[in-house]
Length: 315
Image (cartoon, rainbow, N blue to C red; front, side, top):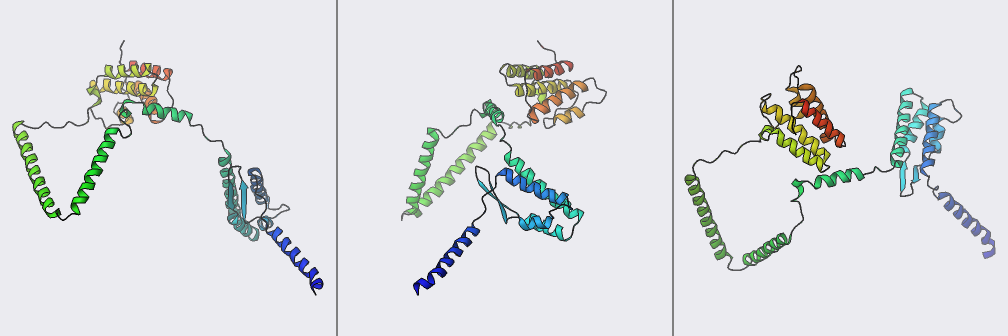
């Protein structure tokens, strides 16, 4: 009986092995093979009278493209394009054909962007290092030993306060704290009133300082110092404000620090002799400072030449 069933058992095992082999997924594509697949689809769409119809191509597509990039395995669903190709095969339409073609071109563009080499961030890091080296960032630092000591003291005070709040003497301590705070507030208020009455009228806080509050010669001197240190962007910025300070000190416009460079330029009449030089100065400043373009010694020389046309002559 066992010998009679042996061929049947062997056939069952063989069929299971065949089914398992067929269930194995196809090996992943390389990026080049994935590109070729997309280009084949584009060819079938652009040549509707070709040997292969869009519907036939859609029927042979896998459920998803598996693409091995060398760094990771990408799984890209093919359902959107299969659905559109099937609809195009049943009812050819120029608009639908254009949409499918655009979809495939976007996938090719995505592949191009993925394969593009990473951008070199060396220059951006260099500029960031130069910015962080400026005077306004010198105070930026991590917590010092004094900061850590203050934090430990605060934690100790909180721990002691938690112990007091949990004890039976809390009502007495709370009353003492409340009266102490009231007394402290009264003393602070009395001291403030005394100083206000004894010191006379309080000075009015001034608004933003106008550009012309610093003479243009000072602006230009600082620009030359920045240029000598190789900080060309700062040098161009300081030289630009030297020109603005010079024109503002001549009464060409009322001081207002909130203006943009283009607003300063619009305040000059078209017939003004200063307009060509200020236009050149403004364009250079915007490209270098706001556009983050590179600056060098030649850029600074051009900026100083525009300043001299504005009448900013110095040794």
